[in-house]
View 1 (cartoon, rainbow over the protein chains, first blue to last red):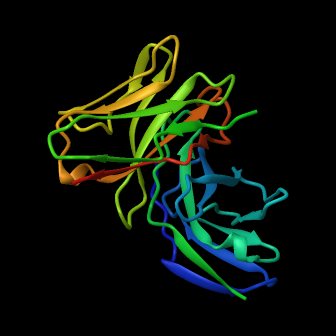
View 2 (view 1 turned 30 degrees about the horizontal axis):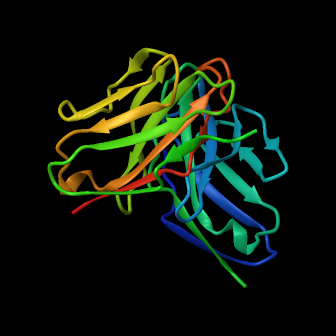
Length: 110
Length: 116
């Protein structure tokens, strides 16, 4: 699985949109882009995943660059409960494991 | 529908003792994965098991660590003769299968092991 690069930390005001970037310049054609988040003292929680097209679900949106070398997780209205570490992970469709980096620690300011 | 259940949530062991961490996967899930998270770091893969089989143990330390997923009962991660460096959060995840469904796993809340 290819590596990803994320900023160590970001801040957002409550009820404003948040764009969390991720670079994955060595992504291969079969790698899926996954996002998980980890709240304090909890296990990682699935957020969203995609391959080539932008994706939306009830939690977030995933915007994938046309060349797939980067992606952005979009939280449309940040709440205090969204404060967490967000991990961008690449996974081959047949891979057994996820490779977690250190993620982006999101702070939401009331 | 209960999620992935891990117990205990917190475990304290003295150096040299054994630690047993349990993981019950979600109902209908037959694949279990163990990850370790050291303080201030991301999760690191340890082992992937299916019922009665170890599929991938490439992330397991060569000594003192073992894992099993018996036909009946939870998956067990066993650490013998624990040392201070084993202090970490250990997370279990489960999935209904692997590869064919790329949307990933469901994680438990973890067991926080402290070696004193």
